[in-house]
Amino acid sequence: MQNTNEGPPSLLSVEYSRVQYSNMTGLFEGTKNVIEACKEQDVARLIYTSTIDVVIGYNDIIDGNEDTPIPKQLLFPGYPNTKYRAECLVLKANNTKTASGIHFSYQFRPV
Image 1 (tube, rainbow, N blue to C red):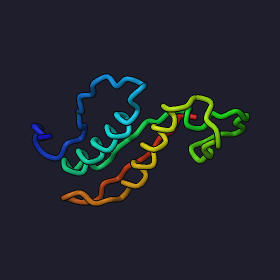
Image 2 (tube, helix red, strand yellow):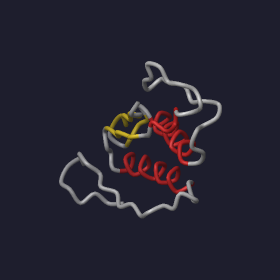
Image 3 (cartoon, helix red, strand yellow):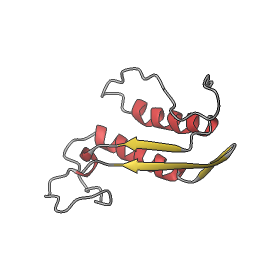
C-alpha cells in the first residue's frame, strides 16, 4: 500500500470487499492488515470500532462499559468472537513503534 498524500497521512483509506458471515476469518485478517498498513504508513492513531455483540450473553448487562467482560457463552455465535479477537489485536498493537515514532491504537466498543 502506498501513500499518495504529501507528508504523514492523517487518514488511511482502505478498500474493503464484502465478507460473508460464514467466513469470519476475513474480519480478523482484515484488522491485521489494517494494523500493518498503519505501521507501514506511520499512522499515529487507529480508532477501531467494535460491536456491543462481544459482551451480549444470556445475562443482563448492568452499567456496562468498555471493560465489561466477555460472557462465557455469547448470544450470537461467530461474528462477536471474531470482533473480540480483532479487539485483542488492536490492543496488542497499542504503543508499538512505526518507522517515525509511536503507533497509538485505541479499541472502542459501543456499549
